[in-house]
Image 1 (tube, rainbow, N blue to C red):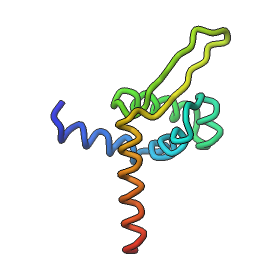
Image 2 (image 1 turned 180 degrees about the vertical axis):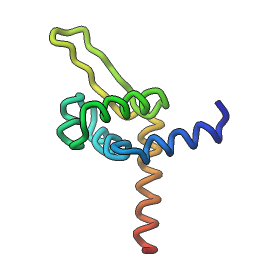
Image 3 (image 1 turned 90 degrees about the vertical axis):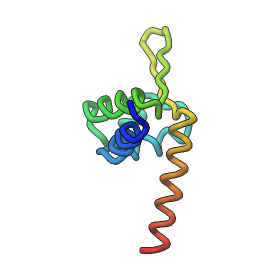
Image 4 (image 1 turned 120 degrees about the horizontal axis):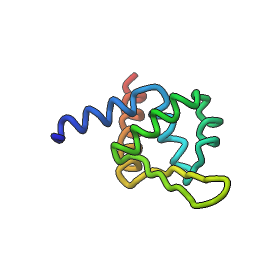
Length: 98
């Protein structure tokens, strides 16, 4: 995958429903699916699709624990954190010039 294509895929994923909200929620640290569902007010199906996409793009990490009942936590990867910081900077810039 070329650099330009990956950039577009990442921006598309973040701009889709819940993408930005998931990144913001994960800034707080490791978070379970149910906590993300509650915090983002997104349907389980959409949340699952978006998380899968963000994991595949390397923005979010997924850690499954060998426990009963099963437990899975999601975290921002270093790339996800840097992207979130860059997007927050862009958001601030746009607010200053609104």
